[in-house]
Image (cartoon, rainbow, N blue to C red; front, side):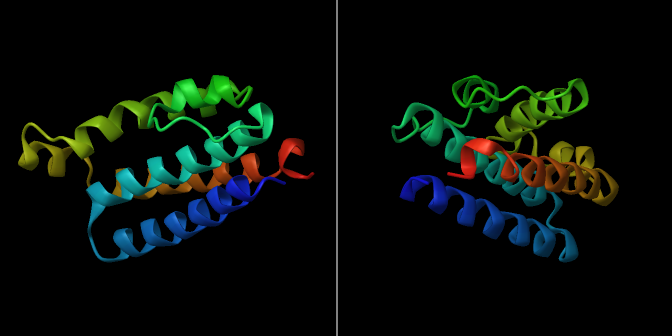
Length: 130
């Protein structure tokens, strides 16, 4: 496995642990943000293996999915799309109070659970077994 891919995987796992701590401390917007980072890094690990190059500096999960040649099931792809859109507003909120209202604990916990499922699924990809 490429060193950068291995680093992306380690960092993605670190981010998942961070998301748990953010949930436990009531920092729900950051749960969403860090969930995005975790999946982004897993996709970059796979993209590095597929292209044999350092992946581009992008946050776009849909682009990275294509680059990594990943075929999500419909439910996972729908979540990836939703997370991709949510990450923009968590990075650059127009109305911070509305953002806080949009991501209460139950929604943040749901994002975290789905992110865990996807990260674990991605880690099983054959391209990472080299």
